[in-house]
Length: 254
Image 1 (cartoon, rainbow, N blue to C red):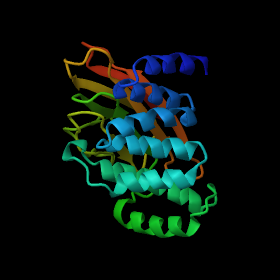
Image 2: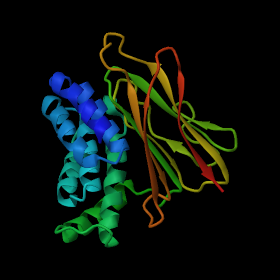
Image 3: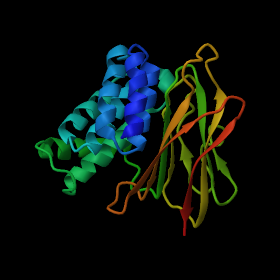
Image 4: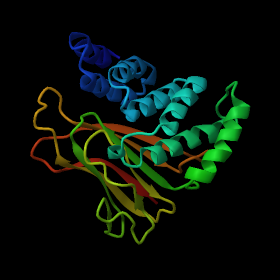
């Protein structure tokens, strides 16, 4: 909490910097302070309403803060919008995340006054976005525009899943490459074999005109996606100039 207060003071000194607000908000999410991240992401949305990743982040924060009705509102805003093609398969990724929340409502894990709407919406999204209940799902987003960050996953077989090898023999699948900023990118593996899955980010290119805020990657790793045994790990990693590959997390399957 003290660290978050210290970081928030930077935002107050630079109220017109949405990149910094997004940066601090991702740190708050990593530390389990989704309710504190809300105000920061709302600042970003007000300043840059054309960036859908902010609505996705707001939905995630509200869901974690126990406010499912508002989370559903922002998920609807994100998944129903027609966004710039440079954001890749954003609708697919946010649709899966939304479907996860709606499934939790169906199982009674999340209480809401919108149960009937959630059930009807869940059936619609299942027909369009469902990937079942994969063993591993990895999502990344980042805080700076004009930046190319690539998600890489090294599977136990030695095969690497990334933008040039989007489908592996093991069944891993990578969404399309986002080269201009913010992401998201996602890796899905339906059936994981025992071994280590090394998750990394490649700092391929950055906006050299921006020196005030370094690029940071916010990674979310799901084990047993969408099931009652689901485990979530969130991590924020600052990318270093001159270093291409950065370790984000390692998933060990026994």
